[in-house]
Length: 223
Ligand SMILES: [Cu+2]
Image (cartoon, rainbow, N blue to C red; front, side):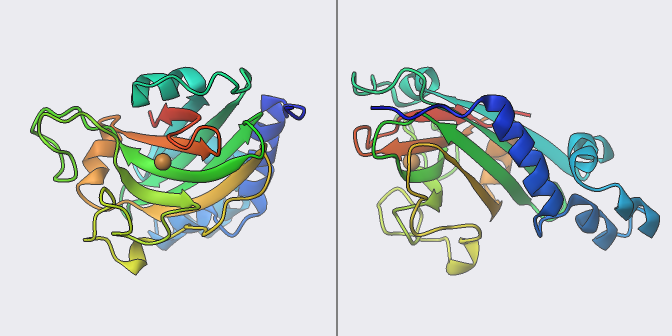
């Protein structure tokens, strides 16, 4: 019952074209900082994206979203009906000065009827040295930011901290797009203490479906 998987290369091409023409613009972010001359604004799009990590302003994060990663991160097997080619990717540019993470997620071949929820989660190891959302001695993966779907506001579930406010809801969509393949473009101003967690490879993206409410594909954000 799975629809045709979009080839990964198509996602990357889509990423490049969206980043080139979307309101999000790396060169504009740079120029706000006064770091580059106006004429450099000509060179936007894929080139700016690929070179963004070279100037100490942006750090590029990527993740492969897979069933295998999901099973490691959740310590559970996915539903055995899950299409084996369910997969996705994450790519994001983190501005080290404004702490804004502009990102794109592509996914393909999820179980029907498709994406239900997506979140950034914190990978808690339970070592007692982690952000307060992590309980010492209790490895888990609480939500730290919704990307689409539920929960639609901070504090709505016990593990999404009530300390967050509406202004933290950048890029939050109440509903995910319909279907088992697609993409999400969003942005999230990463709050402390998750900035450090992001750099420490403790933030992961999780995509949930009806048949895998705990998560179908996941991946840790890595530089
Ligand atoms: Cu989640």
